[in-house]
Each structure stands twice: as structure tokens, then as C-alpha cells.
Amino acid sequence: MMAKRLSDEQLIELIEAAIFVANMPLTKDKLRDTVLSDFSISLKRIQSAIDAIMAHYATRGVRLVKVGSGYRFQACSSLSPWLNKLWQEKSPKYSRAFLETLSLIAYRQPITRGEIEQVRGVTVSSQTIKTMLEHNWVKVVGYKEVPGKPALYGTTKQFLDHFSLSSLNELPPLPVAQDEKISQILSEPAQLD
View 1: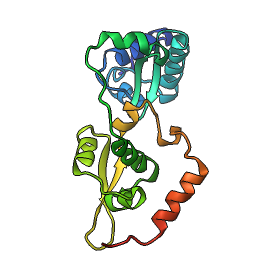
View 2: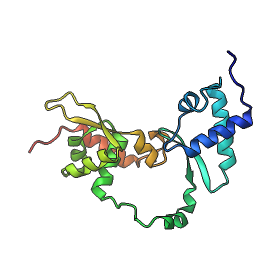
View 3: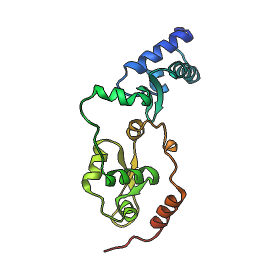
View 4: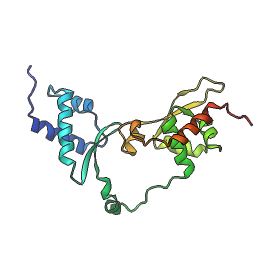
């Protein structure tokens, strides 16, 4: 049986529509295995179509962006002051402790709760970790081979998606002095009370 043919323009239209209607970001593999399953289309050709869509939307109010779990459309961030008026509820405000803990997990993963406490100098609230787990921004990625086998935390693709990152390499670099200080603290043995 011969594979159905799809012109470049039809491919672009189909991929654009699929990403637009999907309730989650789509990968090239997911596109090929679902909406493009009736056609024999290479990942290279799919990428070319995605690049064309990105170029088309580069100067529009919405953009096609790559995030951790695939491609999605999102509003241009410069329009946020006006678009936020569409939603009555306010974005949650996260505490400094929450943001510091999340940052340590993102930059130093895998990391234990004890190591986070060692760097921050204070106890990490169970609610802080619970909230991150509920948001599915962090997950247990293993257990450290030390007595008590504490959980090791790392970020998830949902973390990348929420912050519009395609990988952790897109995180802004830590200031050198701060990075060195964290490394020094983590290299010192933990103080037991």
C-alpha cells in the first residue's frame, strides 16, 4: 500500500492546527504518531514545517514556542499587561522560601531536602515540597546512597513548560560568587544538631 502524500503547505496547516487544538505541548514524534500517522513524513520535514510556522508567527501576538514537553502556542509576553485583564483571579504569590527551594532544585538537581536546608540555613517546610510536587514542577528522581536514603529531587517537564523553557540550559546563569558559595556549602559535611 502506498503512503498518502501531503504537500508542504498541507503539512504546515495540519501541524499548526494540531498544536493549536492540543491541550498540551506536542513533540515531533507525537505529531508523527498521531495526526501524521497516515503519511510517511520524516522528522526533518516535520521540523521544517515547525520552523516555517515559528517564522510566520514571529511578529504576531501569539508565538509557537518549544517548551520542555514539546511545542505550543502562547501569547507574546509583551502583551501580558493587557491579556491579564481577561482573568479575574490573581496569580499565586510564592514565598521567598518557596522560590529559593525551587531555584536550588532547578540549579543543583538532583538534590536532597537536607542539602537544600544546608544551603539555605533553615528547615524546608513540608508544605513547600508538597506544593511543588502538587504542581508537578519537581519529582523524586532517586534516593541518595547515604544512611536514611533521602529522596533526591529534580525538576519535571511541567516545570520547563510553566516557565516557558525548552531545557534547563535556558535558565539564567547564577552569579559566579553565588554559585561558588553554594558549591562550597554543599561540599562541607552537614552539621548534625
